[in-house]
Image (cartoon, rainbow, N blue to C red; front, side):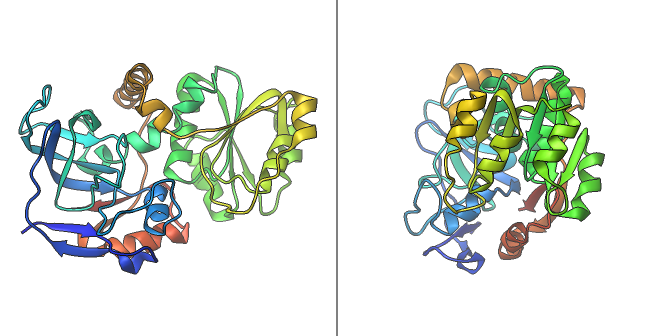
Length: 328
């Protein structure tokens, strides 16, 4: 029987269990994927620990991203057939579906072909990490010549944002607390890197932008640091908050916001994936960038499926630069 990862209670990485279960079968509008590679995401750590926007129903599946070959399709599925090589788009809830396993049943609308020059490991590393920062185009209106501040930039999404900035001709300012990651961010294409453990963020942004501040901020941290970002922002800048790595309260920077006319908004990629027009634009943008070689997944480390606990621990260590992938 296929091996599939489930968990029966929230907790640390040890709650993830590799179980032998009957091969799942696709229902109406679904497809069965023979999994080749699985992309790990911070959202799955939060889901596993009960800190995500969705709460697990036990025993719970887990996982948003996988690449593989379609083995069968359920009734009503069009546009996909057995033998198609696809990867999953995070456009579903983990309360119903999951990708961690040798097989996965997923909604057909959440499966899409990926460029043929990509390996399965790369193919599972594209949709979450590129569709998420695509929001800086769709909602942030990032344009050529504008300054984009990217915090926690060594994550797969942060690295993708650097590449997207390069794609449209914007100027990226990447931040990291880890001095050892600074060179990797430069190698990844960041125009400027700020080491926040030893450098003053506001002062460095003023120096880089000649006192104008950044036009758009892309931040998964939030917490009290929101005040610092507001101080570094330019006039009528937009701050896009897409995560909560710092769980502490984030006081609203009212006076800085009033003085600069700031736009501070929360954002998730589901704003893209649940709207057909936005989703089509995003997929087209990402596919064009991948085909042109401007967008290229950076893989931090790969694990085997029976090392899923170790893979989650590695993600929580924050040592990675890029995407963590598990091969099935």
